[in-house]
Image 1: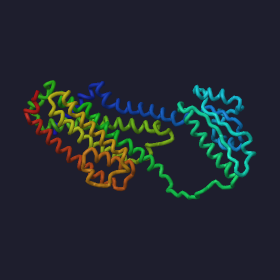
Image 2 (image 1 turned 45 degrees about the horizontal axis):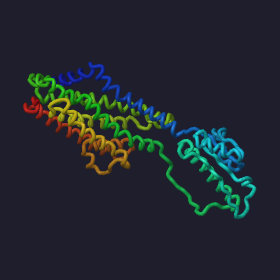
Image 3 (image 1 turned 90 degrees about the vertical axis):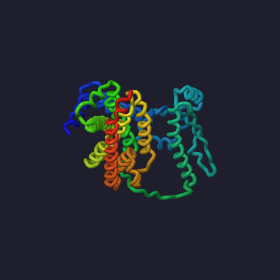
Image 4 (image 1 turned 180 degrees about the horizontal axis):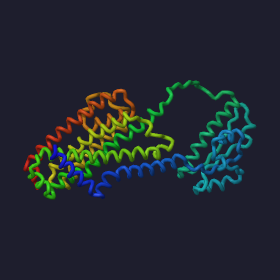
Amino acid sequence: MKNVLTIFKKEWDRVIKDKRLLFSVMILPGLMIFIIYSFMGTAMTSLSAPDPGNIAIVNPTEGFTSIYALPDNENIDNIITIAASEIPTYMTLVDQGEWDLIIVFPANIESNLVDGYQATADIYYNGNESQSQTIYQVYRGYLDIYGKALSYQLYEDTTVLLYNVGTQPIDEKKLMGTIMATLLPMLVVMFLFSGAMAIGPESIAGEKERGTMATLLVTPVKRSQIAMGKVASLGVLSLLSAISSFIGIITSFPKLFGEDIDFLSIYGIGEYAMILGLLFSTVFVIVGVISVVSAYAKNLKEAGTLITPIYLLTIIIGISSIFGEGANASWWFYLIPIYNTVQSLIAVLTFDPNITMYMMITVMANLVFTALLIVLLNRMFNSEKIMFSK
């Protein structure tokens, strides 16, 4: 055990004492996620709240004005009344992208309501300008409401089908959990793997390439202890990197989805403990895989080439969280490494009632896979052909 801790400390010091490596592994992932997601949130907010635009109306009516001039509509100052003679001028402005919408009502439309009367309102907008298209969609909705109001005024009935809608009250906590379950499992698994990739190959393949691994293997320390020490240190360092990414994700979500949403209060200590347990058990599987591949590779470049396809496969598995509807109900899926973590995270985030069973199967399966990978790594360390190959 003492020798394992010695190897652990050696790998730990290699990262901790290198300020640039420490920053890139521990701080940069979470910081970059926070910056990127905050920027995305700001961009999405600006897109979802477009400029009110400029609207010109010919022959405005009292009924139509009452529809768009609601107390909560702060954008009515951008609507002006123009004469019919000014239509060509404003059409030119719309074509040039300097104006957004023109609405032309027939003269005295409301006073001409008689049986069989049918009026036509003209709308002009610029289909090549997104702002103009957006304004058109909004005011087309207002015009539909106004048309039904006129029809009701004339015929006293605009309905063909009456229906009642019943629905369960929206559980905002579960709704936010579903949003989290769509994004977090994929991101967490990706950052677990990327964190391990940043330091794993250098620890084994890098030492083989530099020749320091040969020196380490001829010391009195058992090679099995060297393998365990490296896996343990890389696992803890990768876990810290993943936690940094996780914090970056959580802290950036309010900016991404709105400042009034408190994601931190959605889950309790139990849920966060389960997430941490999943991260802890999964990171050692990932580190075990990277360590085995790095031990097999002749140099650092070959290790990176061999690990990349595995990383891409991990991303594909993580993306499965986007397309599913809740956690997989079949227990044996939780025996599959990486996929079991994604599904268990979904179960935790969506408050699945079977989460305890899923967690137990996932953690046990991950521990078994970790043990098998350590045994395999130990055998590779004992192989002179593998460890001293050039």
